[in-house]
Length: 206
Image 1 (cartoon, one colour):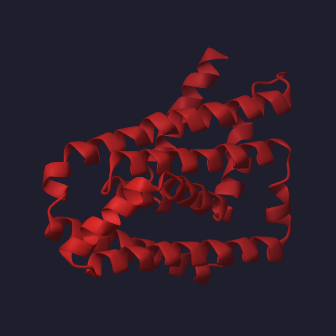
Image 2 (cartoon, one colour):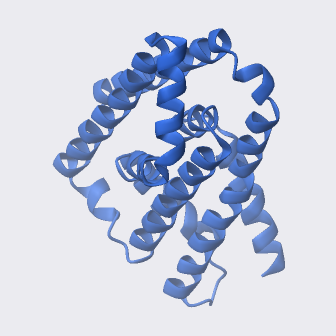
């Protein structure tokens, strides 16, 4: 079991290190405050755990079996990504004073940060399908399938909280540089553009 856990955590590290929409959103929110960034991480990992539970019960197999269901989720996910991208680009175009007001609004609304991370993860059908294919590989032979997969899903989510927490911490350490209006505006533009492109790609892919 120890060997399985080591292999599982190694695989989780590779998964987390692969850049994706969640990584972009976490860094973007961390530009506002560590609180916003960490709550975005918690929202994202709640989504990871939910998909793990759904996969444990085999329900995500419905997405792979139904092209219509998958396409609906894919379009919803694309809309969510484009929405986040447009929001970031709008923030980038505001004046420095307006940007400070926006920072304060995001800082005060922890629920908005948590909800954003959760929504982005749950609206991504790839996350559901990946959980279905990823978790069963690490269930030891002879182990009870359902409780083991639920335990692995919980471990996966908790581990990624720590991993992405390092991103939040690093952005916070760079706050003196990143808080400059010009730098922050450029980073908002980059993150917004990346989220838009990811949304368009998701909408157009087969």
